[in-house]
Length: 110
Image 1 (tube, helix red, strand yellow):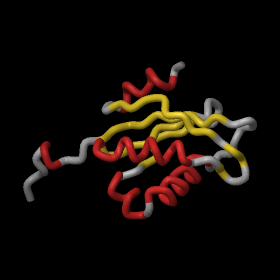
Image 2: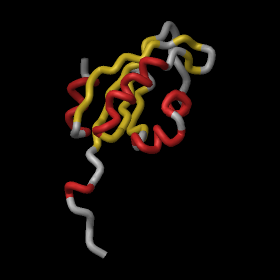
Image 3: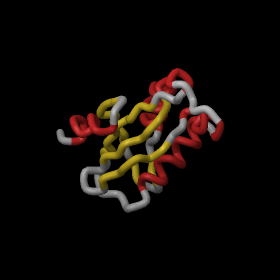
Image 4: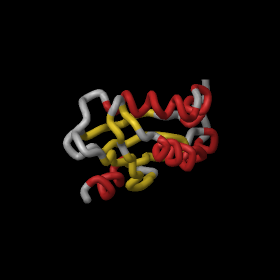
């Protein structure tokens, strides 16, 4: 079996976001974020976007999502539509988008 040509491969983008809230959230926030994004985008929309939680820092309340390059704007819009996690009101701010995971550090070090 021959490998895929580079033009046929999925182009990944990494979206860095920060959760702004009045009180700190628990450990399973990243799972809840993906669940809310699946609710907003729909099951097929989330699958088409290739959503994957890469990392989440509970102290800074910052996370990194991986998505397809064609669906970055939809994912960013869906992140702004998340208003509650559990019973806590939240505001999710997109810090930046990068094509390389190592370059997302410039958005998380602020």
